[in-house]
Length: 245
Length: 74
Image (tube, rainbow over all chains, first blue to last red):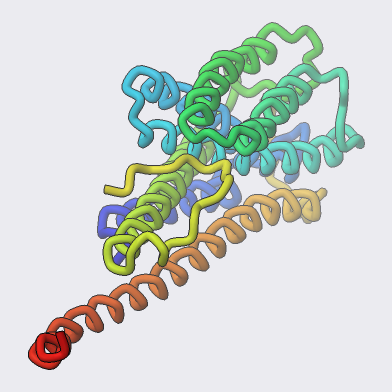
């Protein structure tokens, strides 16, 4: 079995938490008086955004570790974290656009700082893989990618600051607002959805990491058994290379 | 946030909510499908390597049988 029992337990925990959170969101959390049923988008959109941004920061932290130790495993961790956050980021933009259409009547509002700042962060990270791909030398690629991940990771908290400092209060505020923020019956489903989303991220991250390690091990094994000629050269790729010993 | 009173009316904007959740589940499903295809590729490669090991294990015995002949030809 390529994927161990710990990963299976993590997958089950993810499924249970996320399903429980979404079930509470639909059957326990009260209907919002202002937005009605469409407020249910909040339980998937906001956790996805938080986890995606935290994932970008995690990618930056792993990149720092890579530059400190020159260990390619940290580069791979950073790469996978950013890759997953980008997927979640695309989900955030799509679900946000749907919510905006339902709530404001427009798919996108350019004078909303939260939306625009998230889009900037997303587009910034969208250049990460093409940047890696453009560098042929693997060591240089890993080093430049780490510098990018650290710089961009430091930029991410600005997204939160932009939300807090924004003057135009058109974007829904749910925490630390003057009227008390999220009601208690909405908090439990929300935090459960957030935990579920974080677990989903960790689970997919671990699956992807296991997959990359397995792929590297299989190549090494094939090289040992059948010689170098049996293994096709890796060619230019954006993905980090792992030591195959 | 103000809570609505309980009502028996059908919820509004159901289509938008369904679309948002479809986006999320669709992304996860696509990712899982890609992972599943990778897993099947690994299993295929692993079985190929197993065959290679089996062939190598059978190889020395055959080459051992041939050794005297080879020695004779030299």
